[in-house]
Image 1 (cartoon, rainbow, N blue to C red):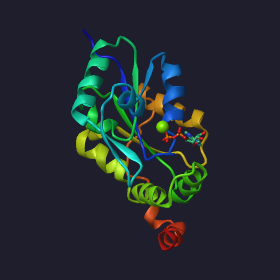
Image 2 (spheres, rainbow, N blue to C red; image 1 turned 90 degrees about the vertical axis):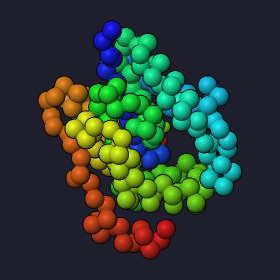
Image 3 (tube, rainbow, N blue to C red; image 1 turned 180 degrees about the vertical axis):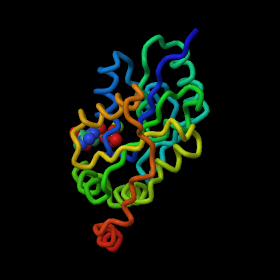
Length: 192
Ligand SMILES: Nc1ncnc2c1ncn2[C@@H]1O[C@H](COP(=O)(O)OP(=O)(O)O)[C@@H](O)[C@H]1O
Ligand SMILES: [Mg+2]
């Protein structure tokens, strides 16, 4: 049986994974698999980290569940979650999209979401240093990684770039986002 098209969408919370995944799955006529929902609905949480207000997923069970979903699918699958690169086997992924957003913009967004100061700091720091890209590089084929700076971009534009990368129309690649060199970074770091 041939393997379905599988697109992983990673990025820190607030970078637009769910928005982009939903539009992309629609455009591809595929399924949108949100990892947080899969973990919650499949009872795959090991425990709740009170201090970080986040649940710890059973990664082994999650890997198994995702392999089954991909193996059974005849349609494209869009896997939405910041640990998607860790839980989808590298051979199964067609494209690994890493969404980036200027940390100073992300910070305002997470404040709006009502995140705690600690959670905001953790996520803004993760975006500043590119944690999600590093994680993707650790476990996925580098040639499949597509890093997109979504700052000031409409979700539909982001989806267009992903579709172009899938069609092989436009090279995507990674390595062009570097927030640390931006003038805003210094003030942000002082403030965090
Ligand atoms: N280019 C973009 N792509 C995706 N979302 C965007 C973009 N620009 C702004 N947004 C907004 O950012 C927010 C992202 O939220 P969400 O999709 O839930 O992110 P995540 O799933 O990564 O936490 C939404 O309010 C969305 O409308
Ligand atoms: Mg989301």
